[in-house]
Length: 159
Image 1 (spheres, rainbow, N blue to C red):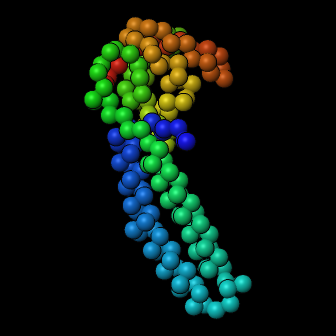
Image 2: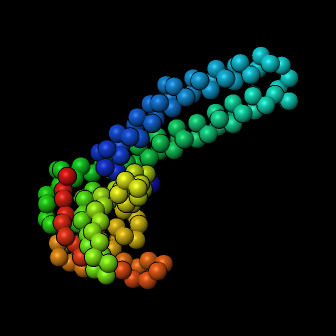
Image 3: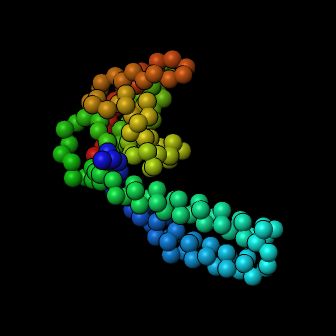
């Protein structure tokens, strides 16, 4: 039995939207491309045909991957979780780098949702693992390639 994959509500919606696009737009387009390429003649030397078949393989693989993730998803709606004041999956946490005095705000999300540029960090990242279970005013020590960094928890939002 596969373990459950934690996802936020927005993350699950994004995956469902991608799956729908792959099935309703991308897959039919690729099938049409394969059909067109077949009409060009000899398949052994037909670059368009081989490219379309390769695209089909990638598309079908991604569809299977998404369907598997959706089947094993554990949707966590942080707005329905009681706020006990600790950093958990789905929260948005504001921290202060104790050394540089710079503030950062991150949301802790599932692996597929993570996007550092959008301040979405994976539950499995060193930063998130170091913050989990902490409360406001706690100090989290995060191990990085450059050494240990201390962050003070300033705010935890359950939104």
